[in-house]
Length: 515
Image (cartoon, rainbow, N blue to C red; front, side, top):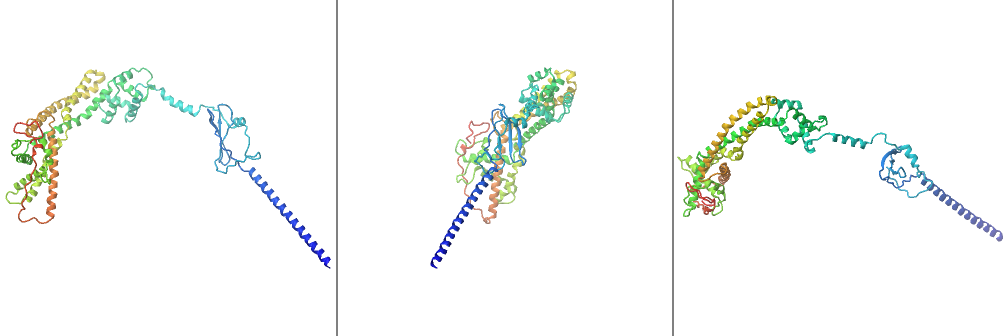
């Protein structure tokens, strides 16, 4: 029994051992099979994956792009170049999609192929049957170079630009030059700007070739000058006629302004009171000195009144003089009633402020250009003489109609300029006398400087009047004034000899720094 049991146990143990061994073998085979399948799958996948070799630049000496191959989806581009050396050994493959770079190269890869260079070039390359686009462009650019330039190229180009801006034909320009009318001032200004020099005019007139080959500017000038050799002289004359009326009118207005300004300065009134107050203040403050009995002063000192400070530094001599003149005018207007200083000051300020309006022509005359005033008439007369010489030089065939149009205008100009020249002499003499009236001994120089000095003084007075008015209004808004006037400390100024120039009756000092 025991023996039988032991036999059964041994059989079971052997069976279990065999089962374990067989299971291990099965598991081992399955493991190897999976490994084999995995390797085979990886190999198969790698064989069907695109391999993108790094781009190879197709740059060789003299290479030019000759063809393009695009795949069905338009993602990959293959550029073909025709090389001067005749070989087609390099291709630039440009992938449009970003994929993982595969460095492993296998002989079974589907996309790793060899390309027959000569066959591909024969199939997909092409040769030029017509001139290249570059040659076309170069020939089109070279075409204008066949044009003939007589002027300097830059001047020719600028002249052509001006000609294109003209809103009138060549025929109309020629007819207008013959008739002496028909062109506005703007067109005449443009034509005078492109006027050729005498040397250029000679070269253009001596040109005997085909006018169609001339550049735009030269063709225009050739056409105009062949018809009328003196065309640009005529354009200048016609432009002068257009500009004469505004210039002579401006000159007349300037002369009238200067004459009225002189009359305003000699009219007296409040301005004379200012001069009197300034002279008295100077003599009072310089009493006991060589400058304490002056009969007059240089008007350049008017600009320095605001520089003279009081002893306490709270006011200036200009403020003091303005207040004194305003009080004097206020008391004159209210002479039948007694009033305080503040009331007389308020009453007299409008009279001082009106000085700017009364001297309006003085302020306008200060802006007149003296050289333009005395030189315009002479310049206009010179232009008239120049045009007259042109008309006398030409014969009836060339300048007949032009002369008939211009002679009447020139005769009227001559008559008017004679009158204006006389008026100019009279006004200049009046300004000289006015300068002598205010500044004895002053000779020569620009007589219009008197207007400038007075204008600056009037502007300073107007500014001070505004400051005084604001000060009075501020006090009026404060506490009510006392019934009895508050005693006022006298205003003291420094000696004025460093600010004013002495000008005794009929004489003038050599220095502008003394009163």
